[in-house]
Length: 241
Image (cartoon, rainbow, N blue to C red):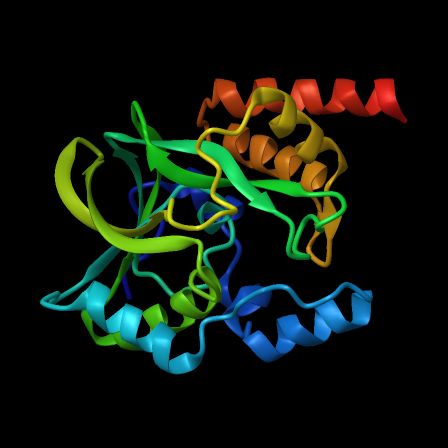
């Protein structure tokens, strides 16, 4: 078997093995139970299995062969999928932006919203692509969609990417601006406050932001917006604790 890290051995210890990932076996029932245990009201409108599988079929319609998945956030270090190759990649025309307002219990609540990143239109986004072998595409994308499309928020789309200098197409999950919690017009003040104070069953938004910045730095990816947001959120916490 070919080493998945053949082209980038420096990533070997930075990507969690799929068998160790919580997201490998995530289901709506697990998330419902976690929210109930937290005491928060259930406000997430989960996709049912039929809807989610329909979205997966639509996204993959016409695709054959191996599949590239473009990762821009936590998928980069915790993909939860079995892949045959990982490469550094750039998604031109897209950008990692902190515009997903979480008020549904994940990393924020209705009383104290949190903040997470989404892939939106922009000047270019550095990330990774994971190659899924053709004979594993069905099984691995079922796992991937249970995670990324557990509820409305993203659109599964193929986007152009540059993979180690070569043009390719990759499946990814971009911001769905039809959803109220996807706030393209969010102010910087709200971004800072939500990142500093939001918390839910998945942990705090501040820990999410810290982890994102730390992991990007380990991967050798510079994201000035994320780093600036973290500095501002930490300052907000010191001033308002």
